[in-house]
Length: 126
Image (tube, rainbow, N blue to C red):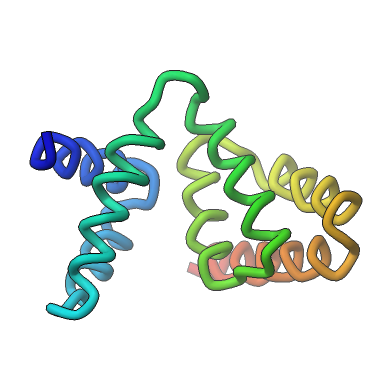
């Protein structure tokens, strides 16, 4: 089951985060960080993200909200890209952060919006 979960997780991870992200992440993994990477691939991607109860759009909305609330800007940038890969529009992402501002506070929503705005500018420049 462990190998099956890992393989499923790696597939989902590539679809959601994109090939470039996964290749870079794998390249930057060493003996110290391998256990947490493997744990995340199996459990987060192979189990939770693969469950049938929510589609990927809904999961992305949840993740964006949680990361905004926690101020996890590094992960937020990664998951904004993932949300776009999962079919959310930039406008919908903005709405998620507006909703987050109401429930989590203006600083959290504003910071998430700032991260998205910078990422969108970076993407548009390519």
